[in-house]
Amino acid sequence: MSEIKSLGLSPELHAYLVDHGPPPDPVLDSLARETQALGPISIMQVAPEQGALLTMLVRLTGARRAVEIGTFTGYSALCLARGLPDDGTLLCCDTSEEWTAIARRHWEKAGVAQKIELKIAPAIETLRALPNSPHIDLAFIDADKVSYIDYYEEILARMGPGGLVLVDNVLWAGNVVNPEAKDANTEAIRRFNDHVAADRRVDSVMLPISDGLTFARKK
Image 1 (spheres, one colour):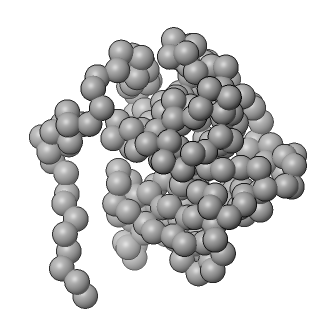
Image 2 (cartoon, rainbow, N blue to C red):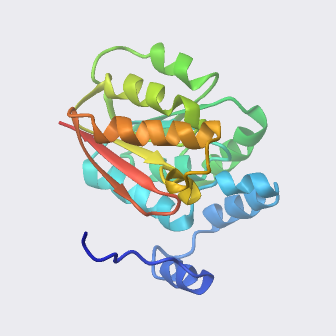
C-alpha cells in the first residue's frame, strides 16, 4: 500500500484553504449565513471550497446543460450556474418549497436565476420524464442516499461520452469503513460506491474533498 498523503483538516487549516481560494463573495456569504441559521440541518450545504470546485469543473468541461439532484438552499446550484455560459441551463431537483425559496432569492441576487429551472417533485420522477437522448453534460448528486444508484443510472443514460457525474457524501463521515455502521444511509452509500467502482462505462475517481466526492466520466 502506498503512503497515505491525505490530510485531516483542522479548523485553522480549513480556514487557510478557504482564504486562498476565490475572493469573498457577498451573495454566497449571505446564503451561507442564512443557511447556518436553520440549525443542524445546515450541514447539508456544500463547503466553500467544494462550491468553488463545482464552478471550475463546469468551466473546465465546457458544460452547457447541467442537472443537480438535491438543491437545499441553493449554494451548490449557484456555484454550478456561475460556471455555465450565458445560454447554459441548470435543472435543479428538490422537494422543499421552504428551502428552495432561500435559493431562489440568492440566485436572483447573483444574477443566475435565468439559467436555472427548479422542479419541486421527487427527483426520480423528474429525471425519468426527461428525453432519453444524450443531452446532459454534467450532473451533481447530493440528495437522499438510498436513491443514489437510481439517480446515477437515469443520468448516465442521458449523457454522451465525456459527460461528468459528481456525487457527494461518498465517504459518509468515515462510516463507510465502520463495521458497526449498518444504518440504511451508510449501507446505501456503500452499495453506490461499489456500483461505480465496478462500472466499466465510466472512468471514476473518489477524492477526500469535504465528505467525499466521486467523479465519474462516461467513456
